[in-house]
Image (cartoon, rainbow, N blue to C red; front, side, top):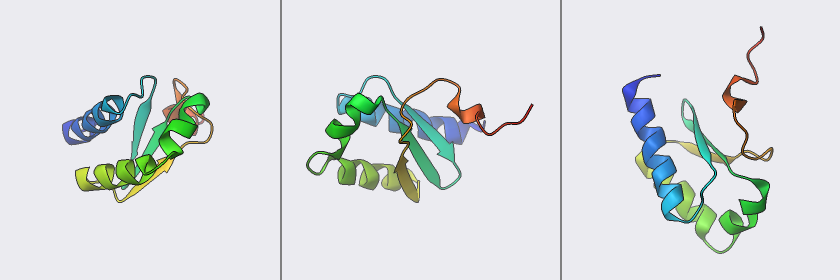
Length: 84
């Protein structure tokens, strides 16, 4: 993973933590940021203007699209599409 991508992921995750989210991952898929949160945190992200603010902020960081993974937070999900 390129240092620029890691910095973008770290910055995005730090921003989400500043909003009170604890267990999370931001996955980098080119122009797409895929946010993984525990399903119990979905309402917190989707209430009020939070989702719009998150999308705006991550787009300002450099992502074109910002998505929420409906499967929720899980370790190793980046490798789910890898065939062994």
